[in-house]
Length: 284
Image (cartoon, rainbow, N blue to C red; front, side, top):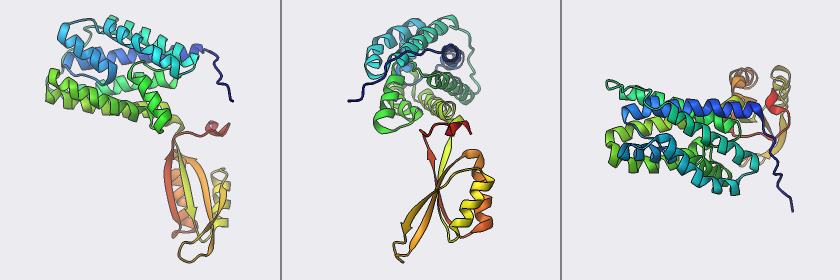
C-alpha cells in the first residue's frame, strides 16, 4: 500500500503569499462588501450575515467558525496544507479586525462595489490557494470537491456559495443578494485565473490529410512534441493518423496559422487542460 507523504516543507515565500492574500481578502470584505451591505458565500457569508444581525466583530466570528472546521481539513489534507490553512485563518481574521470600518458606501453604483468586492476576495483567496493553503470553511469543502469531482476550486466554491447567498437574501434583501451573486461569480473566476491561469494549457487533437507536414511544422515552429495516435474513420474504415499535443494559450494563434497554411480542411478540436504532471513542462 502506498503511504502518503506527510511532511511539512514550509516555505517563507508561500507564507508571505498567504499573508498578502489574507489582507486583500479582508479589504474585499471590509472595504467593499460590508459598507454596501453585500454578503458573500460560504463561511465568510455566514460571518457577514451574523455581523449584520448582531453587530459582532467579523474577525472574531470568522476565526471561531473556521477554527471549528479545521479538524475536517486536518483529516482530509496533509500537514503542510493544514498548517497553511491555520496561518490563513489567523491572518485573515486579524486583518478583518484591523480593517473594520475602512470602507464607505457606494450608493450610486452598487454594481461597481460588487465587482471590486469579488475582485479583491477572489484575488486574496487565489493567492492563498496558490500558496498551497485554504481559507478554511468553504475552501476545505471546495478542495474536497476538486478531489472527488475534478471541479476547479472556483467552481466548487461557487456551488457552495450560491446556497449561502440564497439564505442571506432574507437578511440583506433580494436585490443585494443578486449583486452579491455577481460578486461571488467574479471572485470564483479570479480564483481560477490566479491558481491555474499562469499555467493554463490547451489540448489539441488534429485529424489532417497532411499529418507529417503538420507534425514537422509544429515541432519546428512551436518547439512542441506531438503524440501520433492510430485512428480509423468510422464511415470509411480507413486508417488515419491522429495528432495530439498540448500548447499554452499564447500559442493558439500561431498554431492556427500553421494549420491554415498546411491544411485548411483539417479537423481540429481543443479543450482546456486543468493540470499536467509531466516534469518540466510548465517551465516552458
